[in-house]
Length: 95
Image (cartoon, rainbow, N blue to C red):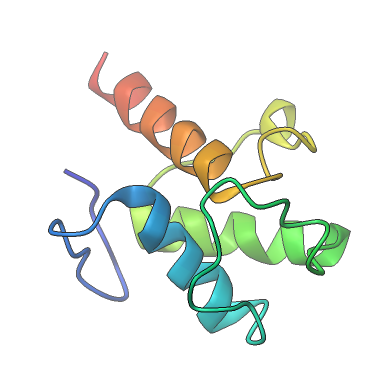
């Protein structure tokens, strides 16, 4: 469903939690393991440099292309929002 160039996607977990794992492993190592998928990522330390790193991670991990118009605070505010962006990109590539 979501191609990966670095690690296989675990389809037994929902995308929101996979996104949280990516954020924790690559950007915010102090993010609690029980962090809610709707937690404000900016409130726990995500910044503009982190957004740019996240774009690269999303493109590599999920095979999607993030466009400049996608670079909004809303799209990167929570794991839920990021998952919606990834799903939208996957749906757009199917069209």
